[in-house]
Image (cartoon, rainbow, N blue to C red; front, side, top):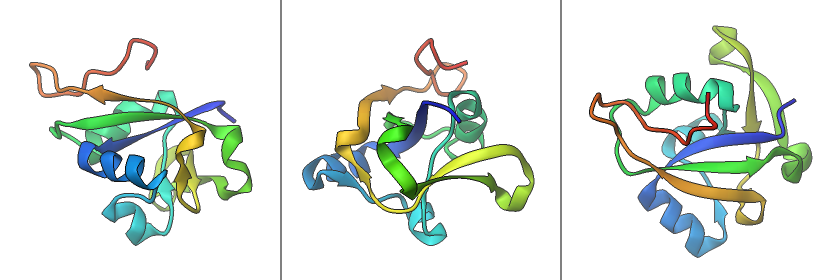
Length: 118
């Protein structure tokens, strides 16, 4: 599986995570019972589907191995989306985060990711 995984977090939620020392998830994560992550190759499609037009997001990059057995690779959307997605069953410890960077919206309304995101 991938070494690095990513999640998009609203800035206010990320500020709370920094204060707590862990990220506990969005309303969607809490509803589903796990934190949703994507690989670099999955990230653009995930952003377009779940965060279209949202400004003030943080791209959170995580070392997958640091999450241990709480990280599982599973089909998303009941298997309707291709590939396996990383799901974290438990809070994200900030010690596992390599970086959290702003993801602005471009003039076309799509998110502008760092250049290493395909």
